[in-house]
Image (cartoon, rainbow, N blue to C red):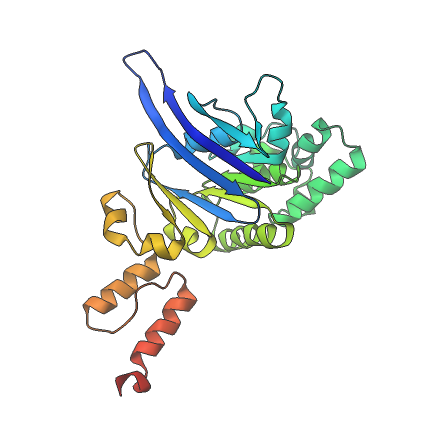
Length: 286
């Protein structure tokens, strides 16, 4: 299964003095079994683009295809699209509305006509996946912290068992432990369930450790794409776009400036540690 955007563009307030070209014509393919990260400065078109993926924004030009079916065709059921391509917004409180967490997370499966037992089983499995224990089932969504709301919103989408999950700033508001747990869950969903995941994030450290592929956006255009190692090797270009490098990459670059003979393409703490130990080892000096 793949989600394909062909020559899509989007303009806000067309024909008015406020007209803004948010997305200029571009092609993107999202595959199951991979994690795709969209990065770019504020206003680069990321949020507009992911709402096209879920059928919320109809492109001004171009088409969106799910399994080669045009999702904006007249007779296409976009409810089917939204059950297969789940979207978690940047502000999770917009997605929470029921009287308690279990009902809220069960809503999607129930709306698809599944029996109550299946809906509750899916909801509880989704809660466990994001670290919300049984004690949360009867709590009001509106009594949760910001991080807990984000977990609940993600669980509500996971309960639909989508084939592609699209998440906007998924770990914002989470403590380090919760952040690590949720990123590990995304890896598990990709590896064990073959889910495709699209992540919008300003955290280059998360992107470096998680993504299989990165698309860099600037002013509504794709300006760079490739593996994390390929993209983050172009540090000066990224910085010119207002983007930072992963912390480990910055550290290695600083060490190299100080004369330590390190390679600077490490993306994780583990890789950086191994590279620094290699560069400082007596065997390397000989």
